[in-house]
Length: 426
Image 1 (cartoon, rainbow, N blue to C red):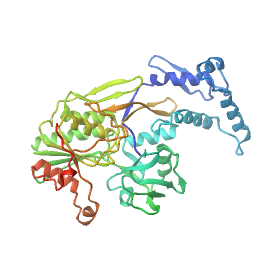
Image 2: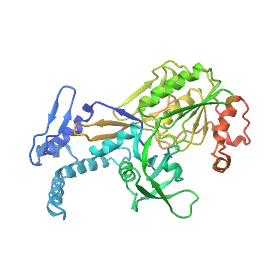
Image 3: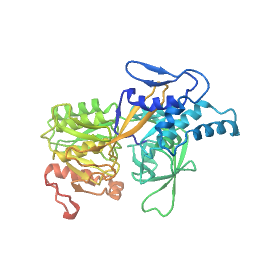
Image 4: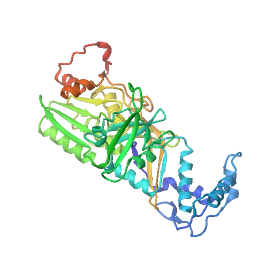
């Protein structure tokens, strides 16, 4: 699954939303509806009923008649052929519909089961196929398969469009719904139909699910005392693993660093800021701008890696938090970006856990680099454009993008075609 650069906010942020719902209905079961640091409001047990209808209707647009909601609620309960109809299921379904009305693929309401699945992603342990997915051009798309995952072994690639999941068409399907269908029991099979540039027909891909546990940061020191720091995602373990990599780089006096963010779909804002700080220091790393937010996030540590020649590898699977790091290092000219244009996921999501186990993820703003570049839907252009040579990698595992990065750090890079190079004049 592809998860966005996230910020956890106190539940007070949802008081307005749930106060609105409270005026409309009281739901049986004693769920908490609103919560602040000082107090919680508990919905009394009892049947669903309309309350405060006059005040609600006065706050709505004139062409909205909220009576339709209750007509549909009652008709659904009375006429659906499978009885009884669960009030709880209708309630969660209504909340999903409320958020989907924003028509933003990254704003989602999670019922308790879905919220648990989402948090498993951030903890980097789940049963699935090991691929991050997202919405691009209104299509369910593979952002990136994880290294050595069932998805990668089955041949899935960044940019693949998932047309069906177990024969269910994905048109209009949210990322979260797709994830719930792809996930399953360890050892079971899921069948995807994909479309890919260059394919004349849909391709069927059968994948066996397995438990996926991934360390988000891996390091390797190679010839020339050059360290590669590969970051597969920005989650809960990224910061401590990255700090360990920084210490290792300094203790071994490395001559250059390659930060590999290829096929990294993003993750936690805090992790992206912590990684960027190793070069940027306490200067601004990213800013968010929205209707009610206008914040700048500065670095939080000393720039311990500043001064060590650095190259960042990016591609079409580098999204969200990856673009924050790449954009900051490019803006300050602390690193050259090599590869292909990034995904273009530059929006901000607040993730709020609710007392009943459900949660909401809602887009609140867009990201801007330190120089004010908005990367949402446009992506970041590399300084040196290098398309990945798939055939060379298949033949002898030669990674031409990484080799270009090494050449740049060693001072041996000579572009064969100057039109392939986007000069960085900073």
